Picture 1: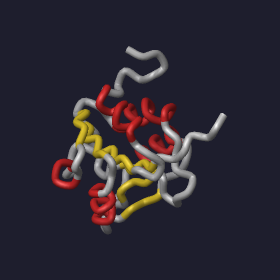
Picture 2: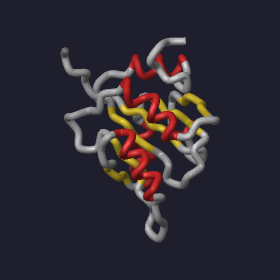
Picture 3: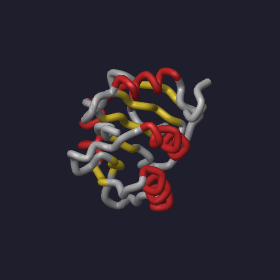
Picture 4: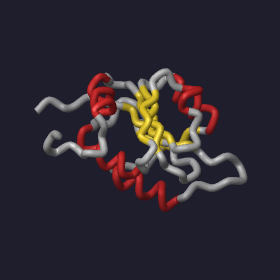
Length: 138
């Protein structure tokens, strides 16, 4: 056990976050997402909800300041709606508003992500893309 690190973050996820470089993307997928079809590296965290996972990751994470959507969510398909309470909750944890990526474009982004974290999130369109930045020199 490490102090100051959420016990929800598995050793595999911590290793993955550490291995990632600036510009690398990670997908936090909902339970419905085709993670194993799209991703070369899938980390299973079936019992966790995405907001809880975000609360553990964000204190360790620097967002990419050189791209326009370092925090993005899957856009609802025409005729469907997003759960705006969920969007607001995730935005409050991340500390910024999300960008939105069309469903199939999100799948394409997932194919190039460093990893996909497959969670137990059951809300529709619960998927999140995070792009890693550079930690400022102190």
